[in-house]
Amino acid sequence: MVLPMKGKAANPQSQNIPPMLENLETDFPVHTPRRAEAPKALEGVRVVDFTHFIAGPFATMVMADMGADVIKVETPGRGDEFRHYPPVHAELPAQGAPYLWSNRNKRSLAINMKSPEGLAVVRELIATADVVAENFSTGVMERFGLDYESCRKINPKIIYCSVSAYGREGEFADRLGFDPIAQAESGFISMNGYGDRQGVRTLSPVIDISTATMACNAILGALLARHRTGEGQAIEIALFDNAVLMTGYASLQHLFTGAVPQRHGNTSPDTCPSGVFESKDKPFYINCGNDKIFHRLMAQVIERPDLANDPVLADRNGRMGRREELFRLLGEIFAQQPWSHWQPRMRAASIPCGEVRNVGDAIRSPEAKARNLVTRIEHPEIGWMPNVALPIRYSGTPLADPRPAPAVGQHTEEVLRGVLGYGEHRIAALREAGALSASAPAATKPAAAEPRAEAAL
View 1 (spheres, helix red, strand yellow):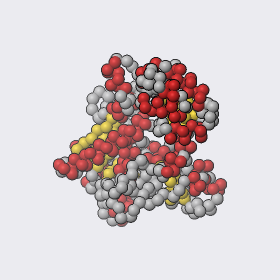
View 2 (spheres, helix red, strand yellow):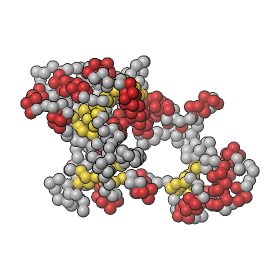
View 3 (cartoon, helix red, strand yellow):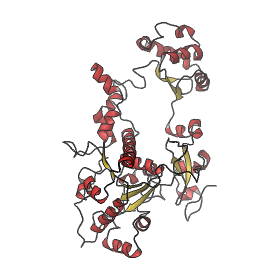
């Protein structure tokens, strides 16, 4: 039975539930809880998270999934701007699907850092933390007195991760950047698409996600180093640096040969045949990454031993020289039968291949179901909500059970009481001073100049 929305009937039509959420119960299983007695990899680690959008929040979410106590520090009211990216459920204001995807298992503290009282709360919180993460525009944390050197005075063992567009020092430190800009300037866009038109960006924010992965890896490495040395340190991750890395081995190929990588669409310039082919009913991708795979494809799948034993085609370079001929031949053969004919034959022959799917088909595929990638979890306001799991499977320290991303300030009093030990009188004083609202009282002087509204990422 679908859990009803809080305070409302369970009729999906009356609840104004987006169409996709109507099918959660039939399409996806309930999340299976972790073993209650199992420890968590980052249990006992506290992260004070000033990040927003994707590259920062996704990094800290991975840590939260590993068991860290991640406290997301936000401006009261609107909070992280990424909260408002669509679609936003009618019953979950400021909790759009992209935000829910990247902020699971966190607590939200809404505090006005432009008030002296709010800034004092943040400093006290940093004193209890293991990690600070931020991705503001360069100079913002300094104006708040929360840069690494300042935080180090509060907490000498702090690990401080700063994610920016082009680094915190040098002639480009002032530049803002988002994923598509990094894709463009790193050469990433120039490599993707077809040669007869402009390159294209990936719709998935792959630079943001990979930057987040780098940031998380760097923090974990710093935590391990602190365990050995007893010292914290500063970490810097630049979106542009990571984007250059994400062009893969193309940079080394260019440095070896001087040639600029070209766009080849779905065809690999390094192997053959590798690309998209059409069966009788749907497209699929084949990747013949070595000579043995090609031999099996010819001999066992399409039953052309003459091609398998051709001395020219037996070699990668020979096949690439006859690419058009091979693609034309395979296209004619594959078009004669449906995917249901070719897929089991290629699987039996150990040919790397896969159906070309859309996202909806992918998350409902047999492979996704077998891995429990998408499940449904309880939400206090809307009943069920979907959850897309990380690809990490620990045997001894399984990831934390997923909790929905928080509303703005959902855990403010919980953090003030439970982490900082504040009583009702002090919380009331903070409220009176405007530290828990979007703007301080007119008589209160802001603690720092208002930061630029744009995020670095």
